[in-house]
Length: 79
Image (cartoon, rainbow, N blue to C red; front, side):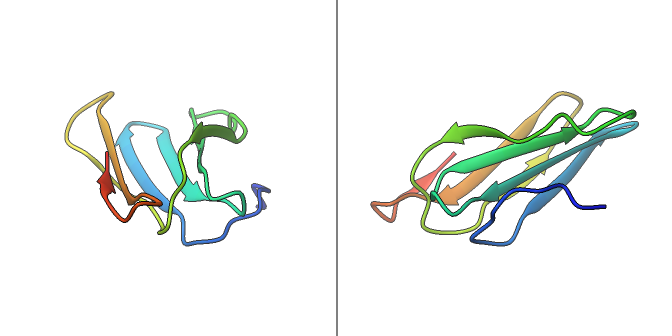
């Protein structure tokens, strides 16, 4: 299945509940983008902004809790 989008880095995927997947990726515009699976269908890509230099990493440490990390344009770590 193709989810579309134009990525410039590797996606990060996390599952934080039954039938719940979230994908975060750096796109060709260097912004952070998100798409989510809610058990029935994908929600579609949405921009979360930012100016990223690297691919994101994501972790979940509980239901409804996601932390996304990446390297910002000024080389600082952002959360």
